[in-house]
Length: 317
Ligand SMILES: [Zn+2]
Image 1 (cartoon, helix red, strand yellow):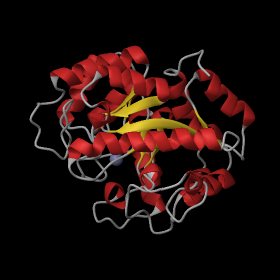
Image 2 (spheres, helix red, strand yellow):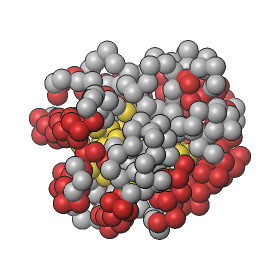
Image 3 (tube, helix red, strand yellow):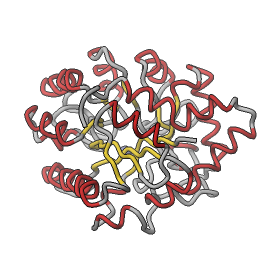
Image 4 (cartoon, protein in one colour):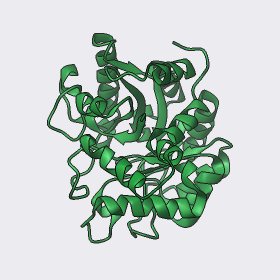
């Protein structure tokens, strides 16, 4: 079964190309491919202060991904086009991991739409608007909210993303930013690593209205495995992941749900899990609960594949 995981911070943890394939963190390519064909969204992520160097650090991680691709073309491929995505599905490779590049915070743009174009050319296909800080394009759910949603520059970034074909990710955005984005764009929107606020009240999670708005846009929600986003006490089990899946499915159906595990960006996950090698425990649990196999395949990867297929350009190698 093809697995697509919509959020992972491993690029911020490794210091050499080789480490991507084998390491002691939550995610490495060997463990991912042991499960089957695997598409991983690789986040360029920076938590280091000051925030004005965040963009520089994120670009280093994009550079690292490019360098892994150049050095190990048989083992790592960045998906930039619909053709790449189709090839990945056809190959069904257990030797080559397929990656999609994402930046966790528009700091990477350095206030420049030209830079956005350059990053797109390199392979950036998903933009998470912000992390746990307000930036020059929008308010974060964990910030002071100086813009009241999207800034003027932020609106230009959304327009640019729409015209380039970059998927906008609203995980970490403030509720007002979320509203602004959804009212502006005609394209599907993702919350790549967020859960249901009705089940776990952390404000990083999505309200029912937001879940419905993402589904209406045609987007997909990636279930986050962070224990404190799964269960208020932080004492979470695999069944809590299932609970969030079931709740979101009860609101909008299974076709808008995927995985956004947040490996190597979270400190605690359900007690039975260690990292990417545990993903099949969730899939098996869904099958045990008599979810139709087609629904399980859609949640494990098919829904995000469908979404990316709507964004990726047709001719680009
Ligand atoms: Zn995050």
